[in-house]
Amino acid sequence: MVTESISSQHILVYIPFEEALAGSGVPEVSVAPWPPAVWTMAAQQVIVLLALASLGVASKPDCKELVKPLVLDSHSPIYGKWVLHVASWDDPGLKDDILSVNSSWLDVSASSESGVITIYWADRLNENKCLQGIANATISGMTSHTTYNINGHTSYHDGKYYETCSNCLLSEDTTLLPDGKSKGRYFFLFTRTGALEGSELETFKNQAECLKFPSEYHFTSKGQPPFRRVSSIQCDHHKHYSHFVISSSFRSLS
Image (cartoon, rainbow, N blue to C red):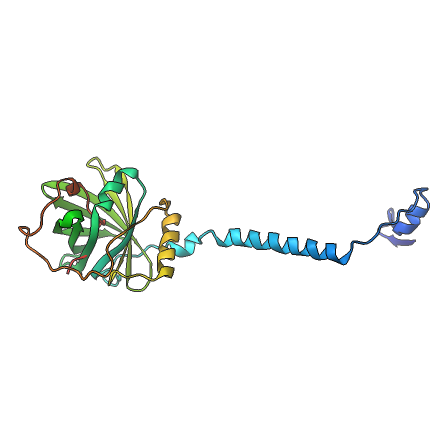
């Protein structure tokens, strides 16, 4: 037995378990050790559980790192020609519009007016119909505000842009009703060529998840060279599509 003075009024006493058991009148119990095979199995189960736990944590995207807004200024990598590769949407009412798009292009350039960019855009729809036009977007920090006039219909869009892969353009588009309320959002990934690596697509899907988009995607035609600007006579306007513009401020056209 070992004693240790704690204070002038308290004494802490350590009594070995064997001594305490011997003086208690409790019969000794003989416990057989686990066989090595049992220890091995238990250790393997612990390793599996730890692996599953770490996998669950790893499957959740790091949204703070994935979703970083772009500041829209003269140094932003938004200018030039872009080809739409994939899009997502968050409202079922927007699905039919986006699925009607076979391919889409945009050409973004700086305007002579401060805080304004010019967008030439064109969409090739199903049944080989096409829609094209030009619009100006006003820039406010990390947001663009664009008004499209298509076939006599006015469409309002607010856009946000995020850091993405090299030679890519990532935009979140909020389509607005005339009263300013949101009709829903699109999420677009453009590239310079229309092509995209598998790892870059997975990153896009994780970014969409971070922004609360469902796991539904529309892929446009790949590998098609941008078509040249054509006159409105050559472009058949699609009546239903006049209510939809495929990017808050961007479209690609060459």
